[in-house]
Amino acid sequence: MLLCSSVSGRSSQSGIFRDKTISSFSLSRSWRKSVMASPPILSLALPSDTGRVLSIQSHTVQGYVGNKSAVFPLQLLGYDVDPINSVQFSNHTGYPTFKGHVLNGQQLWDLIEGLEANDLLYYTHLLTGYIGSVSFLNKVLEVVHQLRCVNPNLTYVCDPVMGDEGKLYVPEDLVSVYREKVVPVASMLTPNQFEAELLTKLSYCRIGSETDGREACNILHATGPSKVVITSINIEGNLLLIGSHQKDKEHAPEQFKIVIPKIPAYFTMMKFQTYCLLKGTGDLMTALLLGWSNKYPNNLDKAAELAVSSLQALLQRTLSDYRRAGFDSQSSSLEIRLIQSQDDIRNPKLTFKADKYT
Image (cartoon, one colour):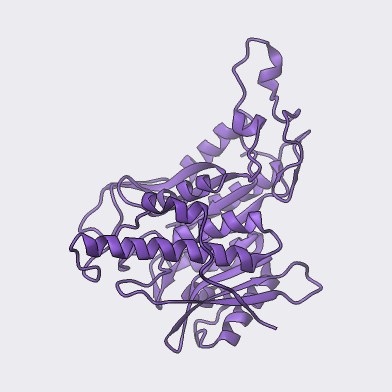
């Protein structure tokens, strides 16, 4: 078991290092022992202006879900990203078959211990997505604790992937762990409509209006996270994103919505699951929200506008390219055109605007 380390010289402000030069933190004990020491890890010695992310998510050899969907966009936005693959599959589960392996909690902790032993455990952000077991999720909570021992200002962005459209596709035990243990330590939460209902115990009556969506955000704020983005809510045939930022506990949160067009062939915000038509969009959306919200820490609505604009441009390109290849875009799972959309990720055209609630 790792214990909280005393960390001299390690400080951050707004999620980044105050001192962009080589600091006493950067010069680890091993570097100072000898002039013949190995060269420093430059992502620590000369950190990016944006931040350093540890991303614990699924991974596929082919296709873009989980870390394959999140790491590249965050790198394009200027982040150093270290991925830990919670599962490693040949392809996503929408194909007829898949092969691969699942990381267990002890294997995850071994990686954390290895990083800690070499003074490599300083991160400005932790990002988590699909997690398939209670034991692994509990170990992730230990990781959150350890990372905050090293950097108390760590931002934890959690996509609580549990289900969609009324269907749960993780063990039911995970719901209470997310609700009771994960939500209280998260900095930003990005559930879809069904997940927000589960986390707020509204599943018995569902979120049926914008007022319900805003109240769900308020319930989640009271539990822990200052930023909540319900990435997709179906209300009377319309698809909405509802975001909420509570900057301090003494004031009501600032809330907004973004109307999202429904694109034939898929739901635009679906998560990693066995029955959706387009994979990786939920993972990508959460990564984009992390990326832009750190650049606009006091303007979650601006960050959401940029994230939605990027994602919708990518989805339109994906659909167009499948049609150009002569493929029926409504007949099977589609792979997102992530590499081909890098300009839309790095410099999105602001085509979607947030409507603030008053």
